Image (cartoon, rainbow, N blue to C red; front, side, top):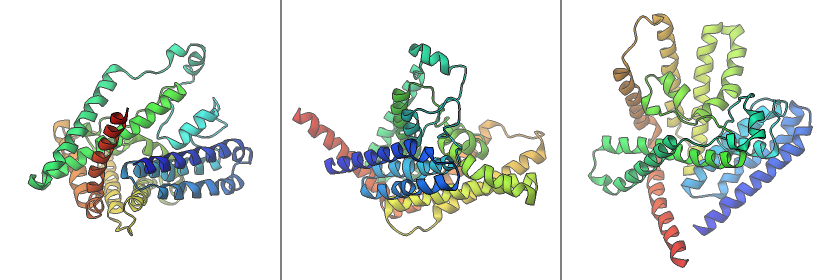
Length: 352
């Protein structure tokens, strides 16, 4: 555990030093191909850095933050677009640039509030007690899920499916919340929400576009959705361009999840998780078409549409999303790591 933590610290120190280069040197190069060329070594470095880690709980978030989110943000930065653009108002400071680059956060754009924050730090964002209590309850629920894993051999497969779904959701939200809390402490600014209670979704559009992992949505929109929609509009027309851009966005998301799975398993991809996202892309596109055709004349009650949506995500996840995890024993490794971490913390406290 100690060696893994040392490697983790080294990886992130290297990443932060690389972002110093991006802010002070690459940013001075005219945007376009030349700046992209200057950023390629950093992009490559962010691809290989996670290979220095083996812990699932350190490797997974690092791959997600650096190899996916940070690299996509740097690609946008190459053309002076996206959250790292230095021509936006107000211009990001070095601390903001580093935080936005390597953490899953998005600063709320509220120009009228920014001067007030500078004049009166007491106005800085603080998380509401209700939100903090809800996150604490989710952490307790995650601990309960992990404890129930001890009885997996006695549980029905559908119960295990529910546990996996809860584990993925709670684990991802808590990890992202930790990153957001760190950024919020450093920046003292209000941040966009990362999740919006996805279990309350009433449609696939609602689930993927407005509730689930909104940091991914915010980075896929300018890097994939908007360019493809713009290019295909003149060829396919506005309606078909929207649908093609939607499916393409899900495809890229699937491929990036495939990359994360490769880092976690170190085995050749089977493309199941890619098909999971492609399937949801087509289903979401069909949902858009049907809603436009009905024009609000018919709508399922949320008591029906909610369970249907969450059930569809869970069942297709059991079919296509989880097999690569269970087949390569990533789930078992993750559960073991909780015990190792607990023993590590106990030893540290005992030494004190």
